[in-house]
Image (cartoon, rainbow, N blue to C red; front, side, top):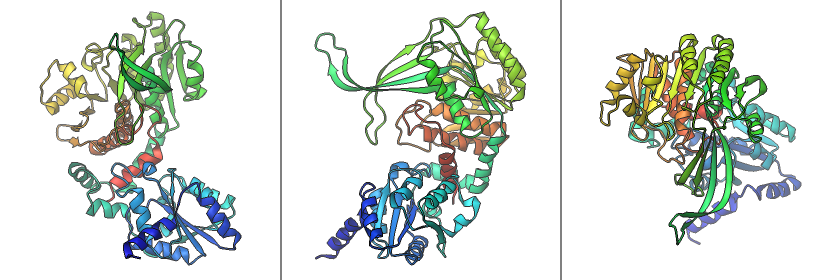
Length: 521
């Protein structure tokens, strides 16, 4: 048999699916074999991994290596560099590895429950608490103990796959690599992590319009023969928490000290949905009779792997007029009781009734640190403009369409006009996000940062701006340098475009791990 065929058969023999692995391993255990498990991404197989596996195998009879599936790796854009097939092939080629299993989960708990190892091995660096970037290692230890196993630390030589990949492989586009490398010369991965940890100290009040994003999935059938309208077969439906509620959910991943002030109606479906996302002690939302809770329904085709979500059309459920003076007075009364107790006021103004004139004036006058996102959408196009609605903000972010509308010009010097708007708004920080082109961050005349997009494989752009705004604003409230604050916002946006709408918030563990990976040079 030819050498290549032998290697191929060896890989197939060693690879177990996540479903079949428990039975195979159970049979080996019944035969008296001691099972050892190693788990990780193992994106670039290097001598440190080889020694890690060799030392692990010496502790037992059968070595099972579980790897995080490529869809669940949370080391930032461009990772894993090598797909599941190539990582399995590389690890299977090692003589002392007996089985390789791809785990369809982001954390290790499910992999440990699959294998039920007698000995679970981690690198010697995990003996130090600082190595637990995600905060999940405690769960791993508890799971091993619950299943009757023990944890051992192996690996007399330690390398970093992430550092090797960043330095010697084209993990990122040239502009992204240059930006991250320059940033890493000033801030280490551990410094980045400590900055994110400091978000816990912030007391944040989110004010703005709650929007429920409804995604209705259709199988597109074509055009009707008589009226030439789109015809589709209903498949599924999901209601998501968007608008100011999406901002609230992002922020709550990073600090427990957060409340939300907003408006909703009294439809029967609203309260149970709201309770899924807001605890009673975080809830300062007014329930208003005869107010239509804002729903933006998007009809979409089924998501295809590697493709951006295809939207067919949308329907908005929004009142034609905003709530009256009595509602604005109640909002002001509630805000007067709350606002001075918070370090950061995040205003997410979608123009749907919360941010009336009296509320805007109160917030501008009383907020310790005011971060503003005044959005343009199909319902308020040309009316909800930042420079017409607001007089000041300590920081703000807007997109290319919004700055064009603000200055009533199609063509402009974006950096100069952002500087002019920042001056007019009396702001310390300002950001202009330009989608796939760049994001411009500004603090002073000399502190200007231009950051390329981190993620080019987009699933859905809905909610990406809210994610950017949430993280960049928290960084600004802590007076972080503008390049780091921009990096944080861009990293959050890169995570957001990989999910449909606001299905999940930016996860702190994923954010920290991805940021640390991108700064490892």
